[in-house]
Amino acid sequence: MNKLKLLDCTLRDGGYYNNWDFDKGFIESYLQAMSQISIDFVELGLRSNKVKGFKGPCAFTTDEFINSLDIPSNLSIGVMVNASDLIDESKTINEILEELFKPSSHSPVDLVRIACHVEEFIHVLPAANWLKEEGYIVGYNIMQIADKEDITISNLSKAASNYPIDILYFADSLGSMLPDDVDRIVKAIRKGWNGEIGIHTHDNLGLALNNSIKALDSGVTWIDSTVTGMGRGPGNAKTEYLVLELDEMKNREVNITLLMNLIEVYFKPLQHACGWGTNAYYYLAGKYGIHPTYIQEMISDTRYDEKDIIAVIEYLKAENSKKYDAHTLEAARNFYSDYSVGSWSPISLIEDREVMIIGAGPSVLKHQEQLERYILTHKPCVIGLNTQQSIREELIDVRAACHPIRILADKNTYNNLPQQIILPQTMLDNKIMSSINRNQILDYGIGIKENEFEFHDEYSIIPNSLVLSYSLAIAASGKARRILLAGFDGYGPGDSRTHEVNNTLDLFRKMSNAPHIVAVTPTEYKVSSSSIYALS
View (tube, rainbow, N blue to C red):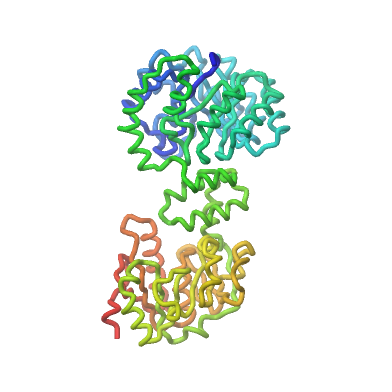
């Protein structure tokens, strides 16, 4: 236990939530709190010279910035460099490092850690030579190692043993490790590495603290943590829990008073606003080896509701989702980059009829009796969106669905509904279609082109994958006389979905062959409105 080193990386890992823009006064209070709980190293942030948009001082963590801080004498300072910042065809690794670092004798930095994916590891190992020659403690963090075979891990550790590296870290990047995995990985590393080993755990499965303690039992001597677990997605082992757990082991005095005050005053409000910490979605991501940033992005995006998130997880489970790729996430929402011609034309159902599109807003239930009375009297063609069931089933003529994630989420429900479903069958793969009775399907094709509508007999081009866009196109293609919207209440003026729907309605209205649209229940959207009670 005398070799045990605790490293708090709150400002580096937590910076993903606030662009590393921490106030100087807060940083100094945090450093005092770390000093009082006997943290050995504080990783103040990233060291990088790549600038894209505004980022605060802890994204660069320059020597000048560090020297401006009041740092307790019992704390050692570290920074992290992403391996990708060291890979540049126009410069050597040494040239990049010379731009980033002075010799350690002229720097307040004690420890430099390089974070790398497995495929980057060998390429950036030579950085250790330059850093060690300049007097730094050198650490390497290997990310996403949990699913690698023991022989691969051992070979990486053997390669590391040829360089002057002080600590070889492994990170539970996907939060999928169990305590037995920790022990297995440490043993695999030991086959090629005799130096110190560190661990960085994530809390997807609620096991970050347990895995850290297990790592100690397995011979790990460096442990990462963050205050309240602050970090991307589900976060990390919590510093406040770890120091209390290790208090007796380290035989050091720990005064947690200042830290608990900081948690109450600063971290809790920030956590409430940003939402780090594990939940069922992160648990599933850890279980299936999905990068937690996918979950983080969906939780913070109002376009995704609970069904969407679960369905995206199902989609990503079958993909290679260990690395986050924004394009992959968007593809899960919207993958109609081409278009297909369907086998069904809406004219056969809609021509010269009024169309009523039933949305999922609560106003449908509130005005259900009058909506049903109108349908029974005037016989519009009623299109229900997805699987919502706000009016009597026998009054809904067909349902429409096109959002691949929504279809995936609802696929087991369709067979229990009496209506046929209009959807772009030829564009959807078997994974989505497998549970849907093909006899229920009316195949109307779709293609997506930003800011455009086109209406054709058996397919349409629409501006996004909203089922509203698809339903409007179906009505226009079917030559509807008029379109009535019910249950399109809106999400509020500050919601991104409101802007997306308003833009869709505006584009539709500009089409010369588009039917007139009238909202007949209360709506916040910018659309002509009337009242279902006033229509005759």
